[in-house]
Image (tube, rainbow, N blue to C red; front, top):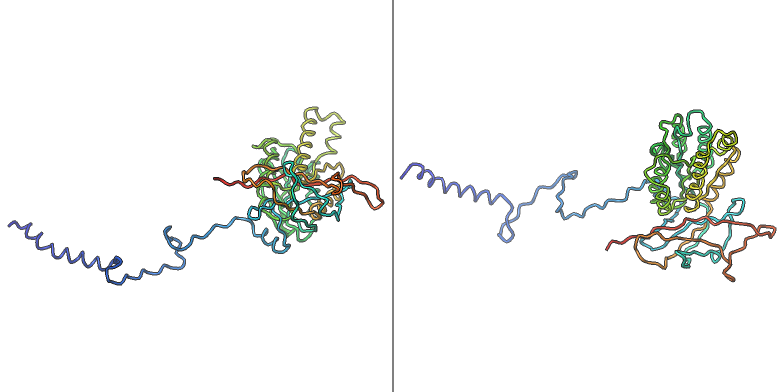
Length: 387
């Protein structure tokens, strides 16, 4: 017999013994009659868990700034635009007289809610004053805010004066935009952070003013906030280079449902330039179109638009905005249209006399009828269920 064959036959028993020993050291199959070896305990900070682990996977929570939750805990406000789990639509409504003063003490049965032209039954009704959460979206570009120019002075004057009107419990964020929006300070009740943010508004960097992009991005960010919320838009109204068109921006703002209060800049400067012949017809037309667009944003979101000519008007304007936001009627209803189709539903709020079903007549202390306006968002987007 050859030598290599003898060596092979000699090694077979040794190889079998090694394989048997290795099988005893590894995990044993169930029913073998042996005890399964206890696996080594993982360190507590080991993050390399297998996807097939029996431990329940941690659910990722929505990334909402903690200040929102803190605010709700302190003020007990629960007022989302649309709450899917309870299927209740909540609408904040302000009723203002012809001097833009809030009209209190209107009974529940005087309100009528129409959704897509169909009357709805009001199930929730409350009135109160509450803290507000507001984002100041400020145009700050070389288009109209060049250093020490009239637009620069007016922009800073409006921004600083509005902050002084806020109450200590109000949350405010500051966003400045030129080519793109930049968050200068996030939501906070710390006024030193707000003042620090405004102090950065000194020298504008770019000539572009992309208004539509800035306001829609801000409204998107605020949709998750509950309670009284709004955007103060300090702007000339001119958009130069946004990715979104006016129609796209308008539709998005309607869907987000965040009230927009417009503070229009450069009214007096425009009038003087127009009177002196320094403003061309096309430029004047662009400004007039911008004013109409800002009025549309305010009306369809439940806000208001102001176009002051003098610095002395600023205080009264900001006081009206504050009163309009703090004093509101909160109406809730379960929509008759339960389709979860993700479509936009139009809302219209009216004041009616329940005995005649005619528009409600409001009188002042002397019994004289007064004109009034009802401010509310134009609608909401229904939830969407994918089948």
